[in-house]
Length: 115
Length: 115
Image (tube, rainbow over all chains, first blue to last red):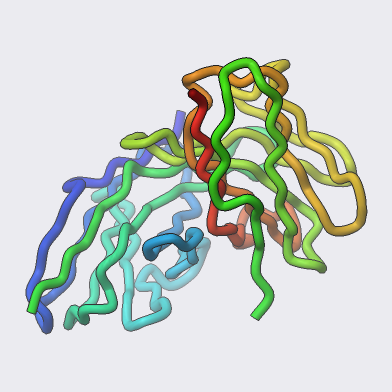
């Protein structure tokens, strides 16, 4: 069965510092991977996704993630944190069972950005 | 930009009562989903719906749950007899197709509290 593990339920960085949010997946075949962000009182918004092709994926708001098959990882990075990046971030994998309709989520990482 | 909307934002109910959570998916989307997140736990898939039928459901989605698209715009989740453990944030999502690479767009959620 597929699964997603996000290391660190809370990450705190200074404004301007590198953001690194970790995601590891378990899948017997190449997965389709997603990062979503949830701002307070809002829904889950897609940041970026990896399906096929280039392993470095660029998303919105300056975020990017790299699919590393050898490490079964899909870590999310941003070179310079902004106060507005404070939110909860979810890594997810598309299930291969059924009709590929199901997203399997990690537990989420809450990012705090301090001045 | 089109978005998924959900009503109400908060719902408080007594154990054993029926609740209906409402969602308006993005207008040209054909696939609809419900997920839930119990406080402190992962976002979990409940059900997917296409062409007026359930296409996939999880073990959580038992006989107490049902979904319906009563008209051309709304998509509802009904819980017939709520239990304390149904307290959670419920997210509706929609996608244009059921393709594995397609993005699911999420609403802001309905927080259900069962007393």
